[in-house]
Amino acid sequence: MSKLITVFGATGTQGGSVARGLLENKSFKVRGITRNVESAKAKALSEQGVEMVQASIEDVSSLEGALAGSYGVFAVTNYWEIFDQAREVQMGKNIVDAAKKVGVQHIVFSGLPAVKKLTGKACPHFDGKAEVDEYMFQSGLTATSVQYAAYMENFLAETNYTKLESGGYLFNFPMQGTPLDLVYAGSAGAAVAAIFNDVEKFKGRVISLSGDKKTVAEYCDVVNKVLGPPVQVNPSPMSPEEFGKLGFPGADDLAAMFAFYQTEHPKYSVSETKTLDPKSKDFMAFVQDNKEKIRAILK
Image 1 (cartoon, rainbow, N blue to C red):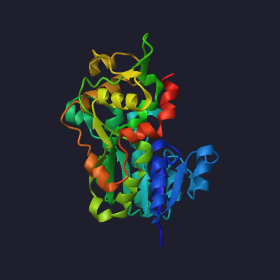
Image 2 (image 1 turned 90 degrees about the vertical axis):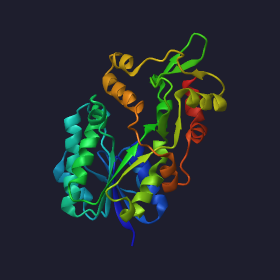
Image 3 (image 1 turned 45 degrees about the vertical axis):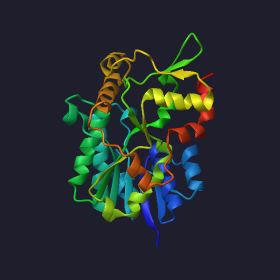
Image 4 (image 1 turned 45 degrees about the horizontal axis):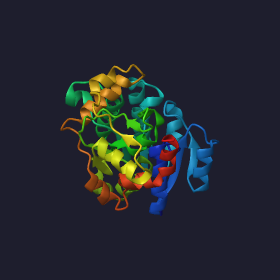
């Protein structure tokens, strides 16, 4: 009998990929949680065989019904929708509490490292998830934390490029030549499905997903190899501290993240990700998959 896995954020990048990965695994039935079951993305998932259920992470009364009958839960929260660490932490705790109450046997949370504890610099969108991780592991539930590296999908964000008078573009990540782990988040669901397939192996563990590790300049070289030579890094890249002073919402948060990425603390693993999902895609495969989207940005 197929086990039911309930996926939060099923219409988003991470959750949608996990839902697809579980469906492809054939060992699971999938229930997707969304705030709007009538959205185009929700309807598309329903057509693929996902049972779509309306619930809100902030409405505890709706969560228990949404999770009823679930063997497992994949939970993800989104700091960038609310810019409120305490509120995000409460959302995560609500999921954990509901999962425990209805008897979920395995919860996988999309967590992140505790940057402030490791570096002394507050990074709310990491630190909140780290707090939920800690709460989950102390809850008594059989649990796994999956920690995604930075998304390859950042290369699809027009705001990360600056157009040059020469006609080329700068890609604006303040990594100062330090290699950066990236994961193709929209394609990483198969790795999460593999975790649900072997609960004894992965319970109590933190699994850090990465599909590639290169310098930003090397990532730009891959883009140029596929699309031509329009992208380069700044020959005098700004520091994370300078990046944090740009003034847009969340700039200081992202600056702390980039500073963290340049320490010895990140433990992302390309090899373990490949073991979980032998078809895991590197950055070249990501660019090939998305070359028309990238080309549209680099007009």
